[in-house]
Length: 317
Ligand SMILES: [Mn+2]
Image 1: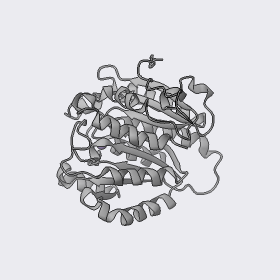
Image 2: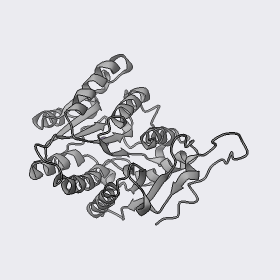
Image 3: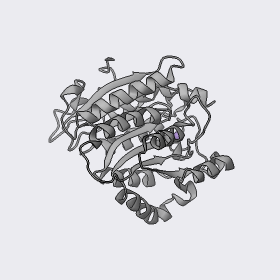
Image 4: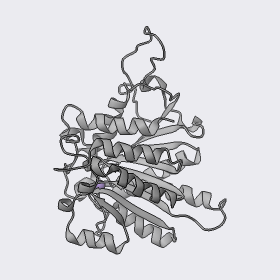
């Protein structure tokens, strides 16, 4: 276990009136004691997949940067927050780090916790999914009848469906869909915020061939929000379980400069947040992660603050 006492600190308002608790005052690290429904943070300190994908490295510092911005946020109705520490990728040992992430996610899910994973490059999704898959497999014995699909909601400027191997930050959802085919697991892959300028025709064709559902960034603006939330409601109704993954590069570069591939256009934070809230309130969300936080490229913690804001909403009961 890493020592995070340097990060989990903030302003103590105990001399003020009312409930003055902030997240740093309710965080605990003995995760094995977590009870059903508690939120659990887990970091994936890794940019090996970004390097393999020829991106700009630095996201291995992401979990630390997001925790630092979370620490001082008010706790409001939350009474306990668990921090399971980081899975750290050494060098280019990506596959073993992803497997380790999967084990930790499966353990948290088995305890009844609500994991929120802080990245780290988007290669984290392949690790997160391995944990969710293990958990769903162990649970499936208790469920009779036909399985409804797993819904993967990816808020991202990119499909991340590259077919080259070994895996990278550009391949995780192709790896996941491949694993689902092998497992016979019904799955719906839905991408919101795809940039036409950030994906080749070949990638669009591959997404089509896989039956992916996707909405481009130009149709993910405020003016279309009601329609998009209706699309999301339909997808949620058809699903048994939901995995939400947010790539911070779905946001405009001015909002999230601290990412490997900033977006010239992007999806407004208000729209991303409306999606997060709707999915969070669906009671089907099993696992969430937030990818591509790169503190080396951030400006005055703007990206880390946005990431912390989205994570905060996922942590609330
Ligand atoms: Mn991505």
